[in-house]
Image 1 (cartoon, one colour):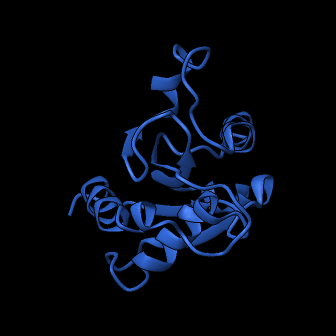
Image 2 (cartoon, rainbow, N blue to C red):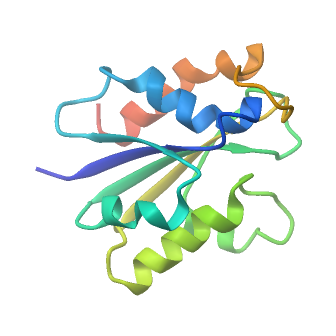
Length: 150
């Protein structure tokens, strides 16, 4: 049976920046048995052990791509390499991509990595998501389920 991990990352003290953590909480009890679900918050390299031995990792994160608040994007780190100079990939770009690169160097990187990112509206101090970003959580759930084959 494949080993999957879903990791929500972000800073929950900065409103929409915490969408990954809020999404992980939204997904609790909604994923197939055997899928590891983590609130990765802003832990960065501390997440390395959770990638080791996994067939697939799905990261949920915030993005500022200049789109409508709550817009949801799905991409792989490989797809972004060629466009990184022109398109913002994540509000945690360095931490997430350094984590993936370190996992690869340590031969702990899953073969299949997907990022599901939500366009932010607000980065103000606060623990609540904007209405638009909160409204994207069911769409994030559907994309995660598609990635898990369900």
